[in-house]
Image (cartoon, rainbow over all chains, first blue to last red; front, side, top):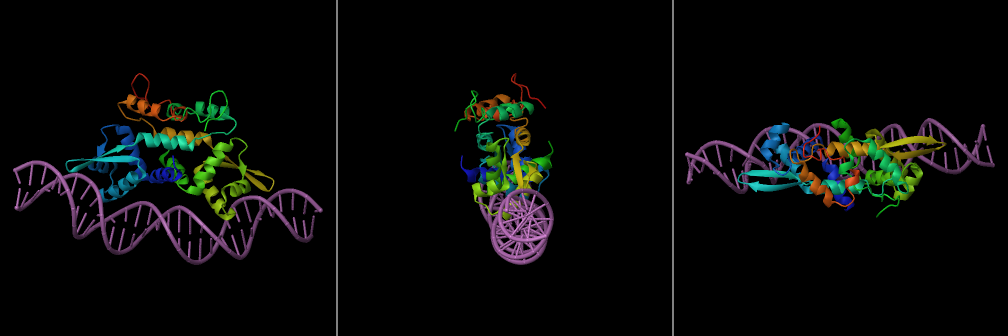
Length: 126
Length: 126
DNA sequence: TTGACATTTCAATAAAAGTTGAATGATTGT
DNA sequence: ACAATCATTCAACTTTTATTGAAATGTCAA
């Protein structure tokens, strides 16, 4: 994944409104939500929501599909996972056990992480 | 984890300099790096690096330890993992298989993720 | 085709973040 | 103590981002 794309993702998630929108869509799953539903759920003025949705779209974190006069938004989960993989790449350099131990301490985090950026025999992968 | 803390993390990671610094420290593992090493490695003026390190510190993403006249910085891996857990919480709402399938498609991502925010029997956890 | 609704675009303003050079504080070696 | 080194703080400026209301676009239903 390219650094500029990763930066766009993190910048997109660094606004309170956009973080809420994205998480709402992550939890919504494949049905997603139309813009009006999002605006109501989060109590954000439509014009402002539109501004933030545009940023999320530019980052690739959400997709849109027209549905009559509605716009249906969905979270782009694979991009979220790619971004996590980028951030955690080659964790702890030569000492992968270090990262493995830390992972074990955060309940629930393991299933969403890269099969460690380092192999289980102790060596690291690219 | 609190939303404001998560926002600080994402904001911290939304600058090219800070993203590079954090990844450098993630890969450095427990030895970390002193400020001068970071500045040299990334070719950032010390005054500017200091500005960005301060933001990373405020977000909690790095720690400092004084070492003579040097300042040694280290990545805060548990916070990184907590943040990932927050972002992926309750993924795909009622349809956890949806997220599980997507995870499987991103090589290397699984080991760094929450043991899915949903249980393997199909139900979701808090 | 007219009127109502959903959403976006535009323009203006307000607020925040990034970069730089000069100055400061702290620590080491001589 | 003195000079050199490592790093941070400060002040000024430039650039980017957020928010709002009014207007425009496009779709549906009667």
